[in-house]
Image (cartoon, rainbow, N blue to C red; front, side, top):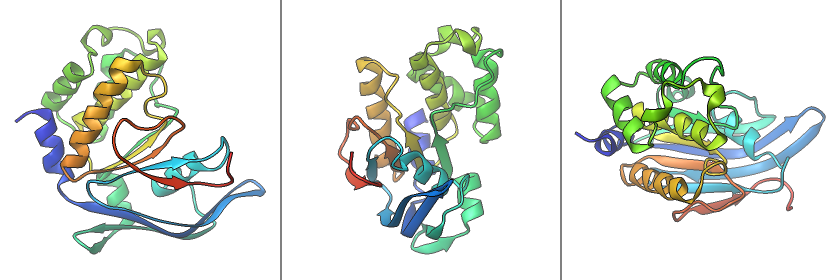
Length: 218
């Protein structure tokens, strides 16, 4: 079974995310309030807004890394509530600005650690390495990789340990045109398999997506 098929099978758990009357504060400033949004299986939603509007913070709230001021984040599977802790631990990937790699370790070691932590398999990791053109980079220390190479390394985790919920913070920004197109195809396969994408962006994703404005207009 190829890597896209495995992703689709795992994403086929058909999990949805809904936000109701969400408000988020950082320091003494309320970034946004009253935000309501639902993202279902097979859907992509892009978060838009000015720098500092709260797009990244919203992704972190959904991932459980930042508390909300008010409101609710709800996960459902087959229309039934799913325990948020279970959803975040087993069914969600967050790809943020910070990839979490240790710069002095090799790309191979860092990818293997992240994939293992997310319960991915060695076979799936090999497929992700091929799909994202990483083989020649694996012996290198992470600090020797360009921003685009690091982003491809981080994206490999999403393929090697498939989960239905993808929270992506500017996923395409460091990538050149070739890899933007390739990652767009990867996202499309994820959606076709029943996964969902919630992405903070400045540049549009290369696939159909609904738009959710966050915070004040730019």
